[in-house]
Structures are given as C-alpha cells and as structure tokens.
Image 1 (cartoon, one colour):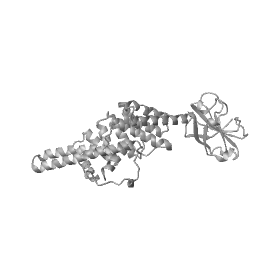
Image 2 (tube, rainbow, N blue to C red):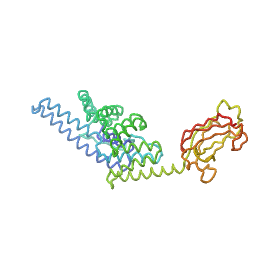
Image 3 (cartoon, rainbow, N blue to C red):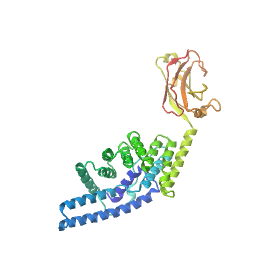
Image 4 (cartoon, rainbow, N blue to C red):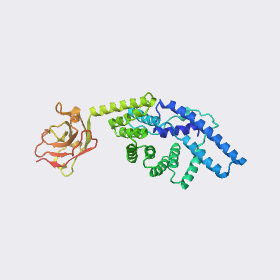
Length: 389
C-alpha cells in the first residue's frame, strides 16, 4: 500500500465520504506534505539506529525516542487538515453527494484504482509498518491506560486503516477519560457511524449533540449535525446547522463557497418540502365489522384540522375491495380555497365506508380515525372499526 492510498483512506475518514471535485486539490497537497514528513521520520529512525549501534544512546533512551518518533509518524498518517477545512469538506461532501439524488451519500471514497499508476516510492510506509506502529501503541496503552492522547491517536490510526469498530472502541476509551472534549466526541461520532453501517442516527447523534453543548462552534460537530438533519429530510434544520459554520471559516475560501452553495440547496429543498405538504399512511378494515361492508362500497379518506373547522382539507376515494390501502394527501386535494392541508399544522385522518356513496356521515356507515398528527406525517395508521350511530 502506498502513501497515496493511506492518505486517501485518511481523507475518507475526515470528510465522511465521496470527495467533491474542489477537494482533489487539497488532497494532492496533503500527499506531498505527508510524504515529506514520512521521509523525515524514516531518516530520524535510521539516525536513532545508528546512534544505538555506536553507543551514543542507551537502550532505554533509544526505546523512548523510538516510541515518540512512531507516535509522530502515526499522527502524520492520520488526517491533519485544519479544523475549519476539515469541517467544511465534511459538509461539502455530505450535501454535494446527497442533494442530486435526494438521498444520503456513502461515507467511503469510491474510485477506479486503475486510473492511477503508482510509481515506486522509496519513502512509502507500508501497511505492515503502520500496523506495527499501531501494535506498539496498543501495547503502550495497556501499560498507560489513562493516556487520553494515546487513545485518540489510536482511534485516528485505526480509522486510517479502515478498522472502524476498533477506532470507535479506542475513541470510547478516550471519551470516558475526557468527557468534555468536543472534538473528541465529534470524531467518536464519526467513526461510530462508520462502524454502524454509515448511519448517524442513535448514539452518534447523541455524541454530536453533546459535542455542540460543550462547544457550539465545533466545525465537525456542526457538519455532522447538518448531515443527520439532512438524512431525516429536515432540510431547514440542515441549512441552519451549516449556516453556523460560515463565520468559522475564511469568507473567501473554498470551504466557505461550498458551505454557502450547500446551504442554498438545503433551503431550496426545505422550501419545496414546505410548499408540497404531503400526508401519508395506511387504512385497514377491522375484521370485526368487515362483513358489514360490501366490496364496492366507497371509502372516503380525508384529513381535517385537529382544531378548527370540520371541513375536509384533502380527500381521496377508494373501494372497500382495495383495503388495506395506502394513501397520500396533499394540497391539490383541497375542497375549498384557503382550506388546505399545509394551512393546518395538526390534523386528524378519517376513513369512512359510505354505504350511500356520499361524503356526509350517515347511520350505519363504518368509520375510523387517527390521533392528531403533523400535516406531513409519513406513517399514519387508520383502522375502520366503528359503526356510525
């Protein structure tokens, strides 16, 4: 494995996934810097070995210096971009990948390995060498389990290697010893999401919330909070989180431009969602009264305001034979001007089997209704189980 691939993996962890076009320039710079650092570390290690052989260094001093050198090498193999850039790139990837498809992007970098023909690099650190450094760090942490920085370094190192469950475990140990470190909590949330199938809901979101309670201006936590909101299709919430990042990055930077563009996209999606308010759910007919309905009887499914006029806000018709039936109600189904679904935040969904075929309830009709729900709820269940008296 060449330095290119190690750095590529490190950047994948740092930015949570697909790298947008503006980020390739940043990546090429990071490769050059890391290669230089790695070359320096290798030269220093050779000098240490030479000093030990010549007797200039005692064995204990040699071991201590080697551990420090390896720790720096591991640090250089992990992402080392400034917090502002790292947070901005994470956000830019998330929205840039997700918005065109209206879905979440993946966290891992994807690409064509054959598109690059790596040349032999005399300064390249192999995966085996990196694994060896990590193993020595693990051994040291067994002897010094309270070393918070060591656990954080181990978490970053495992992330570089793509060993996300182990990275999450290392960050958990660090967080147990430093529960007020906002950046640590954000990094923990990141790798925990990776370890759990690239999903932020649940414990990762709780960690993000804790990080923002401690430091409301933590860039990575803000980026991840926006990502989580976007995954819930809370586009307004995503825009609000990402807007908080703008004062924290240079105004003329690539990060700032990406943030502004993505905030605008999230706002546009929020406006679209608000304009087309849609209520979804499912209607079923209770087996206890099913025999009282004929297959061709009309079923009126409608929403009315939970508090306000009883006039239906949106109506759909199906036949009894179509039950159970899924439904979707929106403003295009309004019965009167000004009486739309989007005008009433809380509604009740009613399903009525009309034997006469008319919307007005009559004795003998069969009916069911939901509890009050949001006018854009997506999993409303209505059971027709009552006979109208």
